[in-house]
Length: 413
Length: 186
Ligand code: HEM
Ligand code: FES
Image (cartoon, rainbow over all chains, first blue to last red; front, side):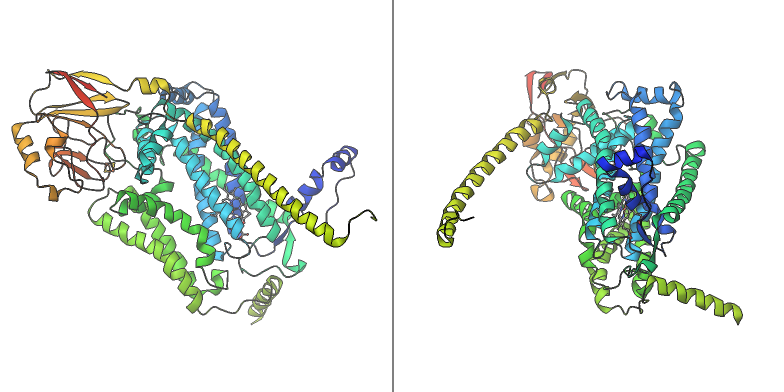
């Protein structure tokens, strides 16, 4: 069934020495994808498009950017005003980061809904979480580079999180800064790391996909592939579908780039960094807000930092906290409801993260934080034990046949 | 094939060989680990503050222009230092607080030896914002000192934390009065 490598002389010459063509065909054409994959399965490839887009725009921006406290802010304005198409480059990169988070968050919630993190995909899942952590680090470092007020104070607040670590915290922060406050050495190393991490992510994506192709994709039914009848070749079926949604995504991205380029940003970041004055209201970018809300809802410095870190790290053990034998929420009537409750909880946390930490916001934030952790620590283990799941279909193939049979008889009557 | 020693002899030889090999592996491994630490150590140290950053570590300030009730901020090590010329009322208020009321107990006598001059690192001990309260018209918080708008920490007239998420009092930098109105910070 495998597609042959082209008989072309040059191709054959290379193939004999390094089998790139058969490798690309095996993973990009013949790879057996479950034939019932829905559109939620296209967000991984969109994430990949965004990673490439960020690298391309980022490398070009670096050619005009100056990583020095006296010049960084002005060099970004120089990009916006003087560099040919510079405004496009910068707006595409800044809004691209948001688009990247949108598709990765959807990608993660897809995995949560269909149980894609469960055996045998735990390592695949771990690489995914590591990608999320790398992505957050990269986005945070990048936000510091324009050296606006929010850049500076965001960097100050986030690096100070490490000072909560007992004993070594203080020295650790001085080491991170390369000084006694966020200053030029900090900006330089942040630029260096912001350039580095996306390439680390590329390596991590490779491992992520290696694990995926080894155990194959999960699917909306959450049952294993049992025979070739359950699958179809990756090309042209998945590639066309991915190309379609990728185009739609880029369309959405460029609506923002062209018409709403600063909507997701903070106006105060167009004010140059001033180490003597903190802006009245410090907020992180939208994609960090739920975690920021968790940080602030614990009334203790170290406790807040631990809770925020735990909010992500707990995902690593989710495959074992979830005790259900059934993967897909389609066959888990209670989990299906609680998935949406959890999603709503995360959205509310995001809203609280943008509000000042006072009065009723604190109360709501605390309730949502408790629920966030209860979802993982209480609900997931108990649900697996007590939920009555629906019968699973015999195979992917059979479920498709049943469905078309039902719709046919439906038409007759 | 025929040259191989008999079975039992070989196994005892292998055992001895094994222990010697184990030792070599252990010794080589230990040297390797030591070497790795030796390489990583200087690499990690390069990220510490460099000599020129450390050299800028002290600054001198003339206090003669600061009238009673007024406060100024000066830059030291890239962060603000607050110097407040306290009124007798503020001093009394700070000294009257019982230590039991403080989450980070410290007497005002220790924090401001001289009484009227209170010198603090103007960086919130929570996550590093600059508290408000130096400028005329700034909010000073519930305890008349400083208020950090980032997550709502209130400091009293001795710069001690009284309410909010900050874990400790505002830090006192090292300083020394060179004469009546000249102070060296750092
Ligand atoms: C740079 C970021 C990422 C890229 C480029 C990426 C890429 C991909 C691609 C192309 C796929 C296959 C297509 C698909 O199923 O959508 C995939 C699958 C998967 N990813 Fe990611 N991913 C990223 C981040 C993440 C994160 C943050 C997580 C979770 C924390 C994650 C979890 C998964 C899982 C569990 C699968 C298996 C899906 C299944 O077959 O059900 N990924 N990823
Ligand atoms: S930084 Fe001052 S209260 Fe958080």
